[in-house]
Image: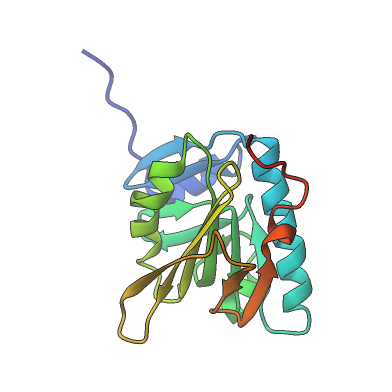
Length: 186
């Protein structure tokens, strides 16, 4: 018989997490360690942060990456790979963001199914979220889910397009800029 795992409150999780050298996501009292990323993952994240930062200069929006927490519900805190927020409260916070407009997850073999299913379902709880983008550096796939005015999430596969369109920001990034420094799978 195994030992019961301690179930954290949000406050307990935050106090504990802020003392940890690694990142951990939080959902319904449970804590999940984040796996370390590969070079291709880090390269795509860095490319997105640079390109989005350039495009957002002079706007009321800012881009953040990997080490920033997004609280999607009273019992859930996630670490998106990249997100953009235009919310005044978010832009004043030091630790927990609550209103991203855009979330991007860079897929890896170990996170692909989670990012496409449960994690997307969790992010959809955010009233502010308008666009959820999945990028697979190995397969060079770029897919987006956009919230329509009718409240439906519409799928857009941009893998064969010239640009990653980010309708929520009125911006686009050429796919070669997204994948700069990442060699195509052979």
